[in-house]
Image (cartoon, rainbow, N blue to C red; front, top):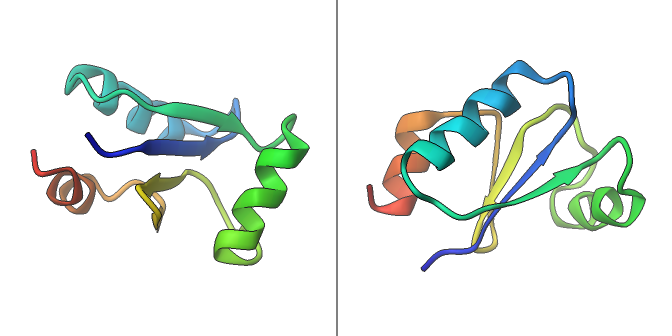
Length: 78
C-alpha cells in the first residue's frame, strides 16, 4: 500500500475535496495542517522547497501540488 500524506489548511476547498476523494476510495492518508504543524511544514519545505499552495499531496515520496484527481488516481493505481 502506498503512503499518502496531504498537507493542507483548514480553509482550503481543494484540500477538502482531496480528503473526501481519499475517503470515498478507501485510501488511508495522513493529514498535516501546515498552519499549525511547524515541523510538518518544515519537512514539506525540505521536500519541495517553498510552499506556494495547498494541497500538497505526497504519494510515497512523489509530491503533487494541487488536486489533479486523474493524476493522483493513476499514481495510486485506481
